[in-house]
Amino acid sequence: MRFASLGSGSRGNATLVEADTTLVMVDCGFSCRETERRLLQLGRTPAELSAILVTHEHGDHVRGVPLLARKYDLPVWMTRGTQRMLKDDKLPCVHHIDGHSGFSIGALQVQPFTVPHDACEPCQFAFEHGQLRLGVLTDTGRMTPHILACLQGCDALLLECNHDTGMLADGPYSDALKTRVGGSLGHLSNAQAATLLSQLDTSRLQHLVAAHLSDKNNRPALAQATLAGVLACEPDWVGVADQEEGLDWRAIA
Ligand SMILES: [Zn+2]
Ligand SMILES: [Zn+2]
Image 1 (tube, rainbow, N blue to C red):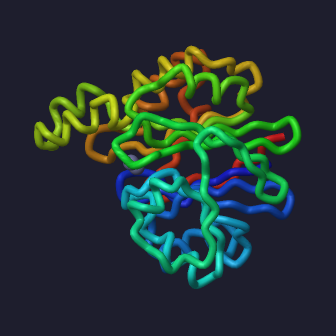
Image 2 (spheres, rainbow, N blue to C red; image 1 turned 45 degrees about the horizontal axis):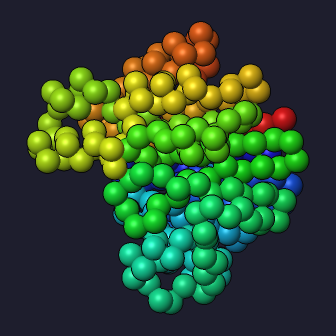
């Protein structure tokens, strides 16, 4: 199994997960043209995609979904709530996700799980291929016992580190936006991500990647240091899915 990021942050998110010849994209928050360009940089084309999985309807996750799905005739998997908010009835093929029921796409077994986030029926995903397990968590206001249960024992984790609490408090956001981002339906801080990580079985963890970093309220080095503190590893070992550069392919073996 392999994974990569086309980019992550408030200006667009898209993650690739691949096993054998199955290639899925989790979210597509970039324009269709930008998605094509970023896919090419990772050595893939949209026509190779088996499916698009959507976590929730926020623009940084769905911007390119309708056009990409239509142009390349791709099936889209999402909850009924996400589809309702997407307000697009011309998608070629929609599969509805029930936030508690697993399904398979080709060689990948997908387990969605519900998260507290200010969207309509949002979910996140754990992927399995054989004995290997990848957890993806990019948008949640807080950790829950259910999230913890779904992310135990992963071989690789893409984990939201949205903001540094101090930088958010002192930063340029309005009070309303600070309350939203830092609230229990907003985004995980570095410290919250570290607390979550500390409660996971990480004995099999080969890759840890910080994602959805705010460019105004966080720094990669802060997120890396905070997560590295939990695992007692070098900060450089913790990857970062960058807004512009994304993340190159990581193999899980
Ligand atoms: Zn969101
Ligand atoms: Zn987001």
